[in-house]
Length: 142
Length: 140
Image (cartoon, rainbow over all chains, first blue to last red; front, side, top):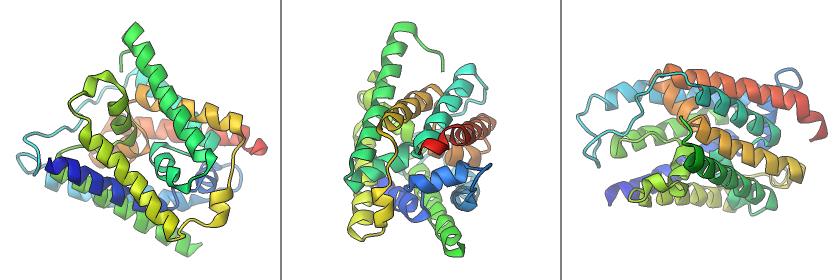
């Protein structure tokens, strides 16, 4: 039960972080990716800020035997580079550059109440359903 | 310009704090595409409540940003061609599930725990994003 509440709080904090940092503005995303044009490096600092905090905190937190509200860790431990990883990253990156939204900012932007973010999130969920259907048919290795 | 970078750094640190809380309290990676796919896929049936509250928290944060007029009118008015938006959404949804993560899961959480797999994925999706922008930006 506690973990259900904390997940909501984390989502809320994460959302404010995305908004404050500028990640919810597709123009800034496109500007950041426009390395060969009018490059705006601002969003590089979002990753710098987030990683700076978490790279220090991660090993400290993992010294604990288990998280506070769970009996075990659920952190991925894989380190294999698979075709799915590479192809998936290419497909995702193309979509990210095309519209300037990645999943988190797109969901936060639903609260902008404009058709753009709604359409984007709708088709993003559609893309996930397509994967689910193909996965049920062909057992896609990830 | 400097304030834009400062806000980016501050917002980023807040994101770092949020993912650290998720790890410390729930023992989980804050990968948004994975959390969303968990409510769609059939593999996580008994494990959905926290995913919904997380997604609800994201939306609630958006409401605060909206109500406080943090979002400028020009950001709210910005629009991309509808066809392009639909294609882009489909690519992001499909690609993040196939590639097991997005900007948050690979880019922030993965890199912070020094995962080579996440570093590779992040470099590739940024490179693909740069490619997409240089190919298609003109028609925005």
